[in-house]
Amino acid sequence: MYIENGNLVIRNATANDVPLLCSWWNDGKLMAHAGFPNGIGCTEQDILQNLLTDTDLNRRLILDIDGVPSGEMNYRTIADGTAEIGIKICDSNEQDKGFGTVFLTMLINFLFVNMGYRTIVLDTNAKNSRAQHVYENIGFRKVALHLNSWKNQLGEWQSSIDYELTRAEFRN
Image (cartoon, rainbow, N blue to C red):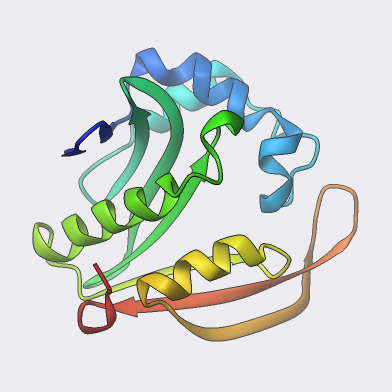
């Protein structure tokens, strides 16, 4: 996959991205929202093995800003016509600038138009109000709230929100 919008590019993750992905995934500050305040403790070999399983139904993507890897996305098919997505702007200097919204709309449009998905879903930590605002502005609907449904690495209860978006609801 390769999607370009001005200085923003979404591209397939490659073996060359493995060291950077490893540093991001082992950074507790970046991974705390996903329940890993100590990082996930992966190795470069783990990530490379994971990337080798990527297909058009399940893919890790890199977000480039001005040619510099600044974040990651992924999508995976979870049912016929339904994809689950995730996003993370990892370079703190590029956060809070609206890039996440643009990258999301780029990917979502591609998934609907080019890949034929009918529904896109995602979930987020209930504490992540910034992400919720972005998702809802794009057209995602809250479909479930899971109170105290899982524990992070520190054993702290967390709540999550499930979102869903159809092509008709998408605000591109």
